[in-house]
Length: 334
Ligand SMILES: CC(C)(COP(=O)(O)OP(=O)(O)OC[C@H]1O[C@@H](n2cnc3c(N)ncnc32)[C@H](O)[C@@H]1OP(=O)(O)O)[C@@H](O)C(=O)NCCC(=O)NCCSC(=O)CCC(=O)c1ccccc1C(=O)O
Image 1 (tube, rainbow, N blue to C red):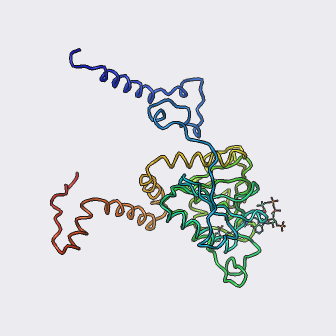
Image 2: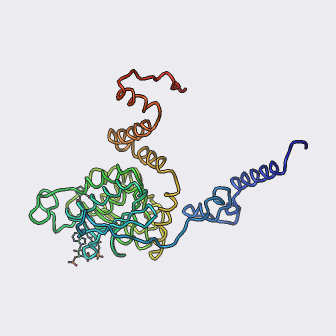
């Protein structure tokens, strides 16, 4: 045993315990049912020993305004010291349906959350417990889209959908009550959906003379499959939260009174991880469905990373210093 020290033995013991923890976590033993949504809590492997449980205390929300003005149709908040933003449609008396002004304000808030480099994840929700969003406010619908008073008709929610897809941070839909019509499409374009047990999902377009043949059709087909997507659009049925979960429309269903606590917990869990890894993964997961625009997004992430390398800097510096670049010192990796 010459040469083997006590600290070596400790290291081996730690390693063995760690491997054992990875192979057979206590909770995975027969007789213990391990809910998928709960799979990272209560485990005793080395990762969980280092990181501990994700905290569940209520965040301290701080209201943000619209470049000095108050928002009228939404509430925009950031959790103090947490990297979480929350954007809430604030028209509960209209079941959080959106008019053009609502969408304009949402776009400004999402843009701010994108630009704020302390924010890593965004919660998108509706005020109250009766609706996440019931789609376009039909009383503002004219012959060429939705029009605010003295405004032109527009379908600006389509720009909001694209904005959420391209935003390089996860957007989590926190859904209580109805997510129907254009409101259903909005939750589908989010990266993750956490539903309260009172949530109801469905499309209504064909009932009210409307349809979303863009993301509303293609992302739904991806999420729940072609037959179910046809059912959902052709019949315009509503589905309760547990059915939506089985269909793959939502990530998890939680009791209404736990909705925000659980959503914030998911945000905190995401916030523990590498922002760049999450950024690239979001663009990778969207790339095929978003076509050239999806490729452009992930390609842009490649350029962004390259700018941070010495090889990238050598190109820029040589130009600024009016000399030939010396790329010979950079390896041609296999
Ligand atoms: C959501 C309901 C099922 C809720 O029912 P209930 O709880 O019984 O409440 P109500 O009494 O019906 O509603 C309370 C109050 O709110 C008003 N209201 C609710 N939703 C809307 C709405 N979407 N527009 C206008 N007003 C609404 C309702 O009238 C009541 O007002 P009172 O004054 O108190 O009477 C139920 O409300 C419901 O079914 N709502 C309608 C859902 C719907 O059909 N939405 C529109 C679908 S079409 C759409 O969203 C298009 C969106 C769009 O812009 C678009 C454009 C181009 C391509 C794609 C899209 C896209 O789909 O995104």
